[in-house]
Image 1 (cartoon, rainbow, N blue to C red):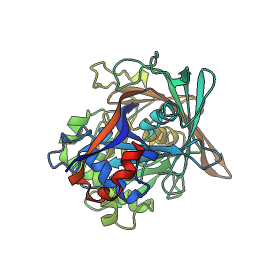
Image 2: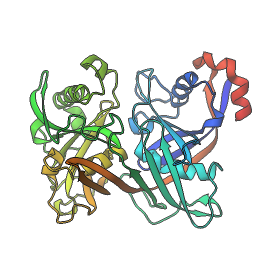
Image 3: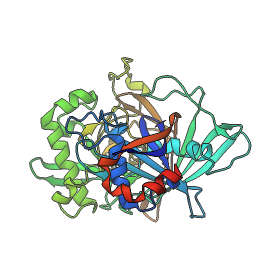
Image 4: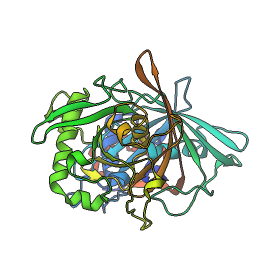
Length: 398
């Protein structure tokens, strides 16, 4: 069988890579998308390497984004994020990727989906996964997004043009409530683990945070060392499943196990001296809190952007385990420095109490992005039998 060609771009957004499609180049029947995405990325792969696709064997490299014009009056484009599982034949749409959000505005401008004048663009992005709005601001030149710049971000070599991402009213992205249990800290009775205090916060993405010490960690462990600690990984996995039920994301543990992408689980500790993946040590005075995040059974080398926003918001909620681990500051609206495996991230979070309830006004962070390849992605026809009925449609769009 011949392969099907579909117009696409391969883009780095923050610390993630993804295949990015203009929605008009995909079949209108979304039931066909999963097969296309898995075939393009190279999943499922029992070896976990995705060598027969564009994926890289890590959750941060196994992603697809779809961008199209939006009908919402408060948005310019719709952004649909697909997390392609590596070893399983599954595509997860229950969460959004914040890092790849940094690429969506520039992609929209470069594709002609949004027209800008002047030397700065503002693209209003509607996340179809969460229903939330993200504002992307970035420099442009001759109507095209600028790539070169002086901003360096942990986890990415070199520098690039800054993309400021503002997550507007990010609370309740997954569950509809910023504090799904109504509490800043909740004690869960986790099978096989026992009772453990955690903070379940849903802002930009649903996350559950636990104290590093409560699960036998210092909080500064490197990803590989943590992944090799099978006892701790099993414990964190069990906590994540219990939190999924407590947050109302899943009805039971069995259903929670079928949703590996959300909630994310994070381990937090007070700022302390720590190693980094670059080899440059992190000093305790360079950070306000230390964090590690896990999803899909993997420890992230750099914090997912939405989790960074959620962690920063949790750090402003009095009584949460993140708040307790965070360095005190006289200004609750000051930028927060988060130490993670790749270095230190700076994020802004404005959180207030309204009528006795915590409300997140905004979370903001800077990223860089770069379109690395554009053309057509080739999809094996044998991998997507359902696609044959719409081959002509896809070819015309490409």
